[in-house]
Length: 193
Image (cartoon, rainbow, N blue to C red; front, side, top):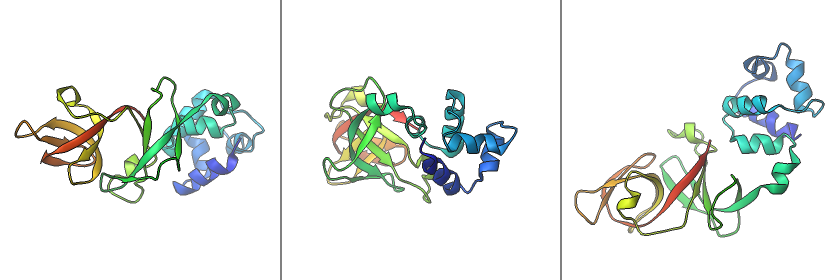
């Protein structure tokens, strides 16, 4: 059990152990203290509730709760970039960061991590977007959430829509644009909240 991980997350959310214990429906805050110190094993329903209360991806809660099978079997994929509060993706140098991936992702999957605290997109902070391979945009990508490479512009996260002519796309979501020329897209396969 990585109690420091949870205590830091509780502090970051400006909550108390007593308050979180009450949100979990525990009669005494000492139950949560025992769990965070490793004296009592976290249950799956508690992990799910903590994930929601602290806005931490469930896989991160499970991994930090001391379930060794997750750490041993969990595959990590390269992080291609960091989503900022502008909706733009800041590139990450290759092979510098990796994200714990859910099962079933393709071998060539990559990830984008949202680091958007204290921005208009703070509700997305700590989300991870797991993406498929880079491809050229086409009709099959219309209506899909993607990481999008705009021609002579930023890399963004958004949903592709048809543009005003056959060579452009509109983008909605964390980043919005009308009639943008798009070089490439990576479809979002799974999002971890």
